[in-house]
Length: 285
Figure 1 (cartoon, rainbow, N blue to C red):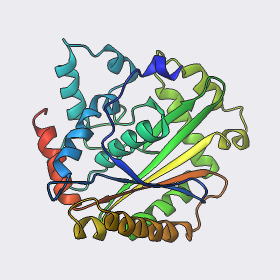
Figure 2 (figure 1 turned 120 degrees about the horizontal axis):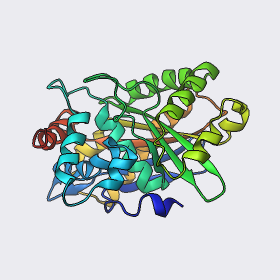
Figure 3 (figure 1 turned 60 degrees about the vertical axis):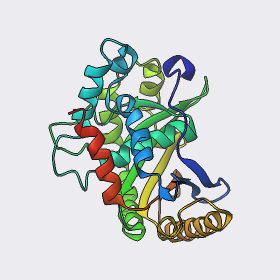
Figure 4 (figure 1 turned 180 degrees about the vertical axis):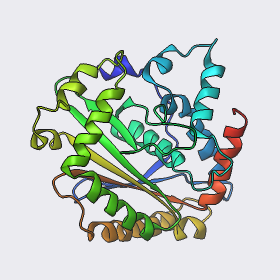
């Protein structure tokens, strides 16, 4: 079924440096790497933009893309994610990166585009930062993502822990499920399965068993700044850094009834990386 929905995706760019699935929570760490002594900032930004249409458009628009409307749809996608000159703290870039990692590392299918349903220009989309699914032909799992696109890892951890506490409460979940149900594209092939999972008559106990919360935290990394190429020493230093950040997260009080996937993405400079992303988007505004 999933192959009938999304046939292809860009070739992977980020490298998996740490992936441990026997922890609570599991941890996945990605890395952009280096090229000729420099962190691959520009290349990473180019890769992120390859995913822009799938991230920002609705299901029918993605399916309709062809040689004749691709430019118009790409411009529409760019305008939807970037509609202000005050771009420095924008979270949409983090949501887009989470989308990429979920698709490439967890083989998810985007169920709705949160950006497509922005209430108005420059408004932040309320609720979870991504709504993806994994369907094996029988069972449907719902991936409700959280992102903190930050410079400081400790601030990211503290703020996302507070959001996880809020977003896993009964009233919040019911409200989010209702919002998702109202935004499902009628042409989406798994619309019926998703609506059945989130039906208001279903006990949350049943639904929670099918929920995964991927948590993406970006941060400016001492290890990324210290090195200029991927070596065994770099890999060891980065793994130590990731292990410490996982420990800091795992010691917090996070919801134990939900499967949480911690995803860590070290950056060299958030401000510089956003400038690279912004430069590409400006060409399509």
